[in-house]
Image (cartoon, rainbow, N blue to C red; front, side, top):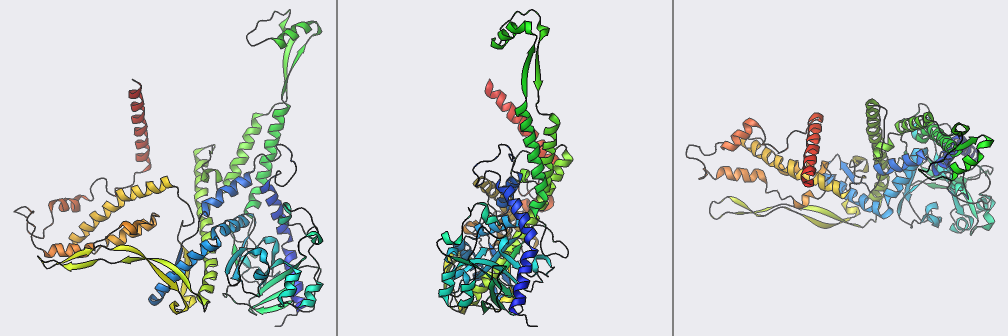
Length: 621
């Protein structure tokens, strides 16, 4: 079915009109987020003294995205595993070049207020990204940039979550008119007829919150608005006017789309889908009313406190006594004719019930916002143990769900960038890969058994991602993020985890390997410890772990015959007494023992407190 340029333009602007109410609501939420003192000459004192939205956003974002992710690229075919590892290294290298963590933090903030949108592509010489130099993307560079929700243009008839059934998706871009004319890529007669951008007209947008009104004629370059639409069925990029009052009888430009089949856009929603609708529920939309009510109550409490005053009332004949009372110091004695003629009357003042209501509003907000107070380490005084437990469970479930959605979004976005790396016919990307060097062995001159000459080690090697290294079809690769890889752990916590790993896991692995060897069960100490270190977030363990191929060493020890150190009554190859006791009674104390339960942990804490108290008493005498 063919679609005329006029039909496509009309449909695109109907899609813009469909999002108008969502954009207005988002603008209101962001104004509440920035508060009354953001880009304003003055605000009403105490009007929004409790910015609960800001506190929730500031707490949630760093708990999910703080640093660059770590990629895991897998292939269903063994022959392509090495190339999959190279793609993962290339993605990690590109993450740092474009500072992907900052981009993910911005898109997560967008998703909290409504919807996060990323656009991935290749800045070719004939692309808008390359023409508009304000984007700071060099020609030929793979880019991922945030697309503002105010600039989104979608199919007005789509109903699937995150526009999965959209017939077209695009975004509006402001570009200098002269650069479009000089590019020679667009129909210049249409570019010349485009109206200049009027930043004071049209629908209000988020960008105007901190941008003073100005007309296009007082700017450095005259700018025009164009919309670049991705049409999946035609595999094309279509350029149309960005001004909703402008229509042309032809397209400004039509070009083939070069990119992954999923298209250039990646969406992030942090709430469950709405049946029959493409847009999710805004998280701030759920919090906003509680934010406003809490600030109204706080303003009321402060206003009542400011209106509180104490006034002295007296009879006219006690005027001299009142003056003496007013000027008297603390502890002075004053003789008065009749003390009952003088009274202190209080007016105004805050009510305790208002403070309780404000605290309840904050608790409700905290519950709806996945417990940012608990996540941020702030004091939370729940009214009961049950309420505190509910808040804690809500925090863990909601936070982990948001992490999962962010990680899936990031994996989808990384896949798009990997497509361009995979499809580049001239790619020459130098990378550094950590490589494990196996141990070397030599024959023993006495027993003839192989002995280790050099232990295994970790070395870095230079590799080059080239078209010749390409292996397998791109559809065979899956892209994932390593869990918790975008989180940050402070140095004290890292030391605590490493100490616990060294004290508990490593000795337990050695003991288990000995037990398994005696029972004839194959067990790889190396694989076990490295896997546990990976789960614990210890990245450097392969640098210090020298595995002497434990199974080979144990087999060699068994072949060497009786050990002179054994007791006379013990046969060669028999289980040593300490090993027999180990197999009978389990692992020795202090090595990978059971984690203490809640009661044991509580008793241990009480005992530790008692010991500390006794130590303090001894130090006093």
